[in-house]
Structure formats: structure tokens, C-alpha cells
Length: 89
Image (cartoon, rainbow, N blue to C red; front, side):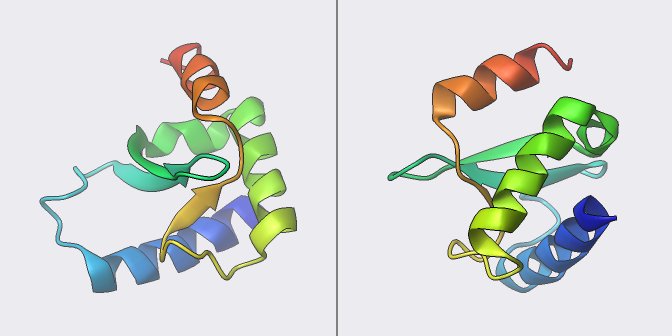
């Protein structure tokens, strides 16, 4: 599945750039925004949600597995991301 590939690569990249104190266990960091990117830490359980999987597919189409921020980058407006993830909690 594409989401697992993205997460695996993101995890490898983030382990090079951060420590375990930056991201709590059971979570991962994503960068969101169209021009200015903002970092969000989200639960891994979001990977099971179809709406979040759609965002991952969009990220894959846009960036492949080469994310400019060094971690998983999701190309959508910040307010859209916040709205979507607030419904997943």
C-alpha cells in the first residue's frame, strides 16, 4: 500500500533529522501547506482513515517519495487539514 511506503520513508528521514522527543510514540510528523509549510504531529491511527489516505495519495502524486521538507509533506491548505483531522479524533 502506498501509505505504508510513504510512512516508512518519512520515518527513515525523520529519524535522521529529529529525536524521539520531537514526536511521541504512536504519532508521526507531517508538513502541511501550499506555500508556507507548518509541521503537525498526528496519531498513526489516522493512517487507517480513508480521508487521510486520500491526502497521502495526493502527496504521493505531488512529491512521489522525495518530500522537500525532509518528511511527509501534504499539499493542501492548512485550514482544510485542520478541519479534516479534527473530525478524525
